Amino acid sequence: MSQSRQAAIAGIHEYPLRVAPGVSAMQIKAASLKAALDDAGLKWSDVDGLYDAGDGEGGGGLGLAAYLGLKPRVIDTTQVGGSSYEFHTAHALRDIAAGRVRVAVTTYGSTAASSRMAIGTGGRFGGASWQTNMEAPYGSTLISNYAMVKQRHMHQYGTTNEQLAEISVATRKHAMRNPDAVKAMTDLQFVKVDNITVADVLESRVVATPLRLLECCMVSDGGGALVIVSPEVARDIKKKPVWVIGSGEATKYRENGGDITVSAGAQSGPAAFAQAGVTPSEIDIAMIYDSFTITVATCLEDLGFCKKGEVGAFIGDGHLAFDKPGLTINTDGGGLSSNHPGMRGLFLLLEATRQLRGESTSQVNGAKLAVAHGNGGLLGATHTGGTVVLAAD
Amino acid sequence: MPNRPQPHFPEPDTKHYWDGVKEGELRYQTCNSCNAVNFYPTAHCQACGSGSQAWKVSKGEGTVYTFSVVMQNRIPGFQELGAYAVAYVDLDEGFRMLTNVLVDGDPTTGVKIGQRVRVDYEKQDSGEYPIPVFRPM
Image 1 (tube, chains in turn green, blue):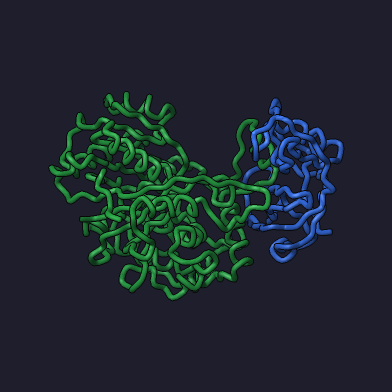
Image 2: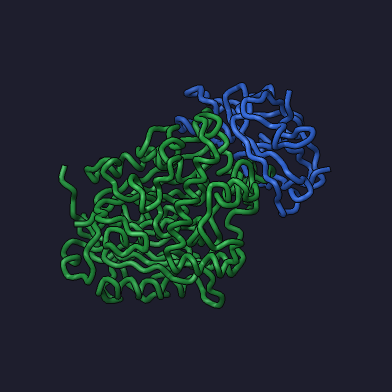
């Protein structure tokens, strides 16, 4: 099957600071959009499709369009947690292919670190809802939720701590090559801003069994923007286009008798690969949402890079780093070691684009096909999977 | 007594469940149309959408599906607990619930996947509703 060329990533920007006191999330979004449009060689007034996860302030498309001063023809305020940006890309592809949009943008801004926003260490309590009434009394933290997936995965398949630690090790190796990530770890006062070993991961403190500190993402400020355009617009952009050739969306939640080791990616991944007309074995580089090691492990299986239950053996040889043969992941340093302001899905698309342009600080030579897979919500409870397949010419 | 967060009302889907907890009953639903076990409680059946559901009372016995021991939680109501085990327990009637498994001694060694557990209603300082937790059988 030939790959479609219906929409292309034309401009990207990643807000460089991970600690940005005195700056608002909305300011990060606006500044990032300007820089991403400049990256593409497009004007503010060219934007006619606005996609937003409502992260800056309430109201999503309502408040953001007014703040930015845009009058888009298509407004999509999909908010599905960290994978919102994969969903936005899927919707932009659809809207551009339908002729409704020429220049689609999605932006992200967060001051999670500066405002000491609890994105995962506490329980989740709110007002009355059917779900909080059933769950709030038990003190299940975000980390313990993911930890329950790891516990079950280890029990069900024999996956080991050593194997999963390879994800942290490879990701840190990439982070140490990315100046923004090194500055992030420094500014956020990491104990050790250096490469780490499997032993370092296994000796780090247990946060919620069996997850250890070096298996958990950081909490940072940050943001960015993504510009997706029609093929006609793509002809005149400054950088080479990165084509959006497939997408998939799915959700999953606690189910009676369900298998917690299978994520929504088991549905979104095959859908995206089918639309793209490629198979996982053809993919050069995978950006997989690394909220925790287990998120990456589970999603690698669900996307079909290996069989369910075999990810331990798949990653256990340490090949995830960019300079080893085999599948490479998260070359920007990931959420584990570069940035995690709460919804990391945008950065997966940004780094995949850098790889396909040849601009990564841990470049995989000749990378032509990439996948970005976001996981939003709680892997061991209600969550979403958004998969996007990208191609360079 | 523990001081866990209480359920909040009005909340029409879960009220009957919590009324049951006050009476020492662990209630769940089955669908009158398709017989699916429905839990957490909702007015509609999550398998077929029917609005006709029957309330049943569980024996309160089940198996630990998975768990994690939270080593520290600074949120009031949990910081006093020290390390505590969050778990999904599969009840014998076919529903899965998030809960805590309480053991004597260290939960990191005392809780295991596959462990048989039974419900216990833990009285709370925080309010009138006891909280259903589980202990090894």
